[in-house]
Image (cartoon, rainbow, N blue to C red; front, side):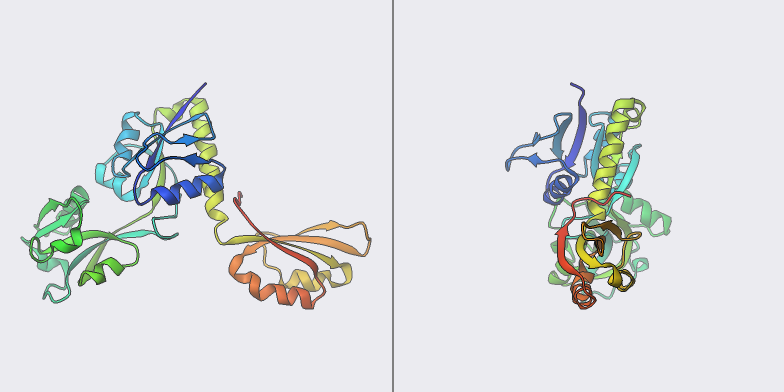
Length: 290
């Protein structure tokens, strides 16, 4: 059987990645310390490694494809194909930010004031390039973790990943610059894409993952509508295109089906009821594929 070698991130992104794949139609099972999870798609050979390592493993062909962050592609300078962007992170569906932070009581308020000072970060290569591009000489050291607690005793500033900024505030740090906005990416080895079977498999996975993300916050709505009220119903129904209308056995009635944002439903259902809709059913969506 042909196999596609897929690298998935172990750690903070793992749970959300598994959930996304599940909505896309791939059920992945693993135990706490297991690095070779089981997938109900036997054509996938999955390995769990840190997101930071995945770009280089994909570039070298250890993996045919993988899920990682745009930040780690830049950090490793890996030559890979970015198949698609997947807007999700460890705590939500938003980009993450790499920011420069200093203690709240520091008199440093801009990165220019960090000239000849020491910075701790996990994103060493990118940070060096960033400050060099700004013409600001700094000393950048690798941080193995707990970066927030290193300023000011060990370093003058840190460059850290944040989604909400809550951890920085909790450690009494203030943001003085944002150097990178990063999102999750599905990447592929360039040689693997020359194999017709692997290329099609990768493209299909990409389509399903994007469809699963498109379905986030969306629901389907079904209802029965008397034809004389149909125009009023159509006027209040948002839709990706137009609602689907099907004739019922009763010639005076039709079934109407629509996809809409979940947050709109609580406002729309009372209006639909007011204008004569009956048998209204709301249901969740796993994928929306355009």
